[in-house]
Image 1 (cartoon, helix red, strand yellow):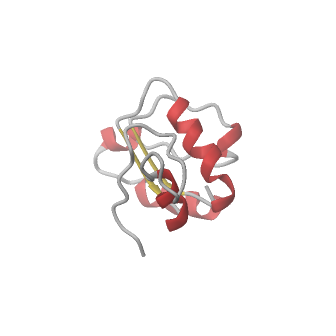
Image 2: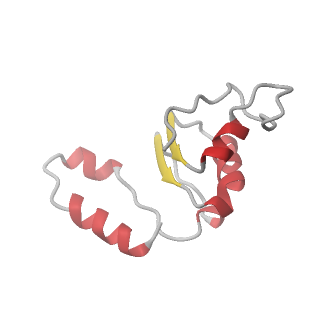
Length: 104
């Protein structure tokens, strides 16, 4: 995560009234691909194009499994990731097949 964005997020939640929420929020700054991931239940990421594939596969290999991931990335990558087997749009290596929600 961008250090400036991490600072703003931390500042925004530092006075959270719900202390349980504060304990559950961990902002990771640095190279995600080189970071040893802690246990997590939810992942939210606005992912740069250069690390899309490695990030997705790192998440899919992570144990214990997380409950949900909200990933925002380029439309073309989403179409490739959600392509049905045999499709000319790409090769799906994920199961279950992801469902793109929005395109901008």
